[in-house]
Image 1 (cartoon, rainbow, N blue to C red):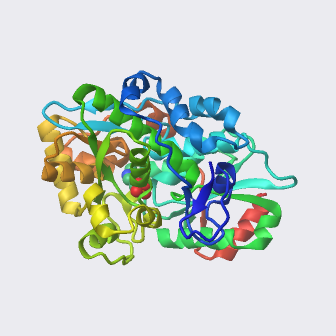
Image 2: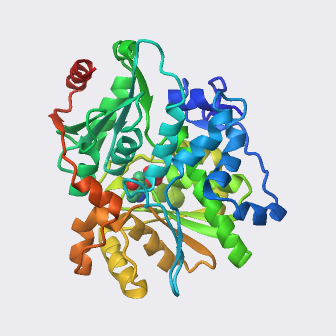
Length: 430
Ligand SMILES: *Cc1c(COP(=O)(O)O)cnc(C)c1O
């Protein structure tokens, strides 16, 4: 399988090269050359009986065929998908796909763990230090740090906006020991992202470092995310004999695009709904057909605070025509006030505690009245207890993994938003 650029000007790459380079040379995003449709209805029952890692291996195998890691895919999947991904069926309510039972309690653990399992088997170029450089608005950095902290062949540098993430999120960025450098940037998320972009463009850095990107356009994150849509749709099919509609808390569109890719593979998936917070670039596109990236606004669902969703180019490539997009996908933007209400109402109705991101999807669920919906839960409420506890009047239960991280010593370095300061620090750190 080869991967091509959404801009169609770059040469096709195999999956490993596409993961290592992040962005195609023509500035586009990598997409599979084609989607094999291997899953005919009669196979669904057999597929649904497979263990999660086995199912994942089966789904991902065509994408890794002819690559240097083709033979390793089985062990990569066993290593990456080692935590539970349950479907929680609420009484008189929707099925909830809980993606937050990994080490840092957010769905990004799935992609980050897979990416690190792949990279640990890929040799680092001689005389270079492999450096995973990542800007985070909250959850990505923690997931990437956790996934790479014990790998010997890579170090991680995280840039996050100082004072703009939750206390527990910050602890998850800063507790990892010598392999991980957490930088609190005196600026906003856009500054962090700019500093990372400028670093990737700087040739003098590349002399010493094998720079790896782990942001949400990375194929190494997107491909594994297909597997939980496949898994959940199969489980639901066995029960209901109908296709599932997914409602996805959406920021950079990485999670939702993976769902659309799973649908392309032939899994029993109906429509996919994008639940956004007040950052409504996608929703505006649905209403007007004009793509207009916005300035990022801070909301209660901070991991979705994205003004210019970076995977839009992949969505547009799949659905060049707005009408066609609307027949498969839906969208809604949800205000902070509605997020608060959704957290309260969901608890009242179903005795179920949700995070502010998941709350956007529950808000859509209540509006839509779908026949076979699956709400995607992207983070544990405990990670956002500072928002959730005052609304519900009690502290959300803290998962064991999170409680353990909270006891570790924390270390961060504060820097200004000048990229030269970052580079000086990297050269010294090496
Ligand atoms: C990152 C994140 C999102 C948004 O996911 P995208 O792939 O960027 O659309 C939603 N919820 C949580 C909890 C996240 O961490």
